[in-house]
Length: 165
Image 1: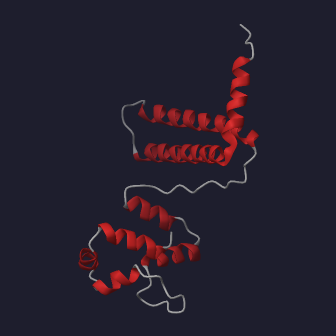
Image 2 (image 1 turned 90 degrees about the vertical axis):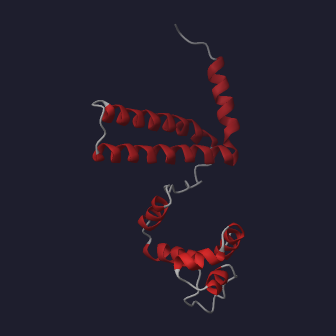
Image 3 (image 1 turned 180 degrees about the horizontal axis):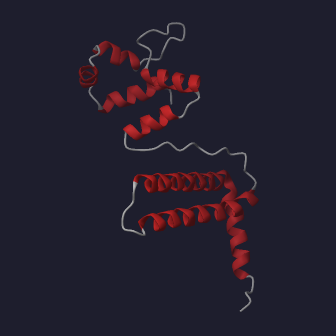
């Protein structure tokens, strides 16, 4: 979806007058952001979403996006590269997700052992949580790419294999 299309959708549920008032801008400028931009005329009316994209592309610094996500109560997780489309990748990916979850639980347990979590411990928990989300997103993307069936058949074959007691 293009930035002007996002703005057009936002303006269906949000008052352009309110936005203009909140941002101390003209109502016509807000409506201009919902119009398809003229690539020849990059003026002050240039959509702020496009400006943010341009700033991020120019700096290649994701702290800009992290900051924006944090300001809105969320966080940014980069989509995984889909170059791991081979079905055999799902087995280690499954193990990776489980390991990341175990690592997160270990960090939480260690931090909470004294019934208090300080700022440094909170940062460690956040870092492990981000790793878990990245691993899980990679796994889900592989499944969406059509690799889940292979994982399912491997899991069934392993379940049917006799175990030693």
